[in-house]
Length: 299
Image (cartoon, rainbow, N blue to C red; front, side, top):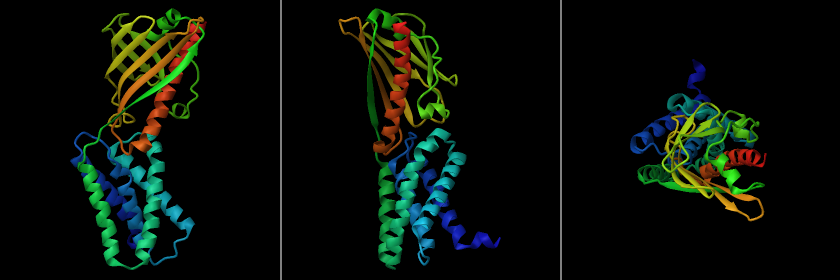
């Protein structure tokens, strides 16, 4: 019981309590489920500031700061998983961002609290809190498109028959996130070879993206809208896949340039960080499918 009342315990308890409460508040204000940048930047900074306050009279070595940052990062990730049901891949993606800004908060706290200026201390917390409120109440919207190209040693008519639907991918995954458990595309089926037909993109864990063909220009353009995506904790509330497209270009020498396009909307901010991951994952989905189409078409 004595340990519970030590400053060391409080230095971890209160930052995490603050984080859980503020995350709950943002879920109330942000009704569409978007995760705003304040949740991943302002909250971690204030967590670091709170932790630094308990160590303001102690010798804060670089190793101590790193250890405390790591403990805070791990505990807030655990609490996020328990209270908000986040998936393991999501937590892996968010952890570097949390670590950096918790560390930054501790370092800011070292400088602020060592000055022993109450007005400055209050001003820093007030400024961060105002940014948090303003960001929570602001509108957030971000859509992007990812495009990749691959040359296939086969004419467009041979490529097309595999583009519309393709048999199961047997090759091992190369992308590290797929290797550690993120679902990867394995098969595509269609209800018919015509405009308006239904299409399904099936993933390795059995998840299915329901699609509708909106452009069917044989040997040239296959475009499909995603009409329903799985309710998986790794993607629900984080990203919506809006549309996919395959463009075939006859190179005139018996080869075809295959272009894969995907459109998506992100619900997690800051986009300068999360869009790096979204692009990487989308590109590796493209490459896994397109390399399979290349193999089938060149057989």
